[in-house]
Length: 173
Length: 237
Image (cartoon, rainbow over all chains, first blue to last red; front, top):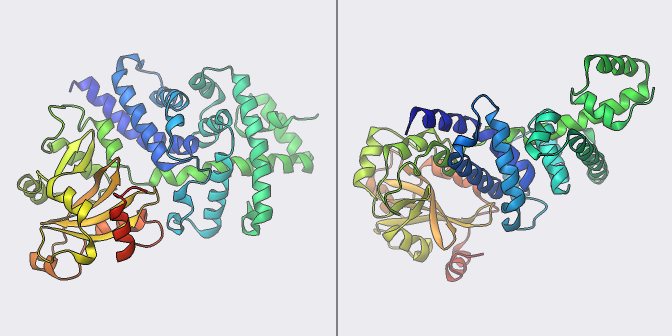
């Protein structure tokens, strides 16, 4: 392993938690998210020379994940479950109850967005990328990112007020 | 001035230039309706971010650590082979494994279940006697002096059948996937448990394994009848 590769791998390892979080936001299922991260990591290693040192590795990796998701992983996801099974059990509950219910409602609502909107939400609201960075990851104009985000948020507001009406405990948010 | 929703979202996302931001700041102070719209959007953005924040704290799956650190892809001499120090290093770094690591375990492992567990494509796959026991052995009717002892059988949140086992000095957790048993965790059995303790009726699992079961289990563990049914189905759901 060359020093360059070692450094590349070290950075890759340090970014894994972020990749998993983004994966979780876009795939709806924990195992699918990890499959996607693994695939992206393998591809990143194969195409290491395509990454330009000095540019943000995280954005580059998000781009690989996004492409892999759209091109293939999405078509072979485990089940068409809107509500991921990890979230239906009581065991995922490490947060205070209200926060947990909120998080659950929010994740379920995000799972119901279309792919484009969910990915925009994942990049900007979950991962905190600037619109410009998100546009570069997606290869679309900034205006497209802002309109996807706007529609996604409108829909989320709607879905969450529905679920708040159905479950008053969640109304706090 | 009227502000569109899109503009307020950009304001919350800090995407506007200083001047526009300042003008909205001022407008929000004057206009309670506008302030409420901003607040609503801000709450949503905060809730979305917070909903995924806990993922960062989750234990990192070994397979991802392996893939990124090159633990297995650095050298792929054959499909099944012995463990390298790098794999152990990756496992030590992996909180999910919760492995009791140290010279003892590493040294011990080299002598121990090489024939029972193979590293393939960054995963640990049960082989030999272990694979056989995981597929065939029922906890309710196993021989008390068997080399492999099966503990709990349960369905994971991912929908797979998983079983805990004791193999000589190691305790582990394996889940059925693609017709194989993937060993998700392997740990040295608790120091307090002497070898003879394994031969008692109840299988004493190391606490790390029990914790891993608690994290993964969906519902409760299978009873003897459900275990038998699962075995007959070939551990497929």
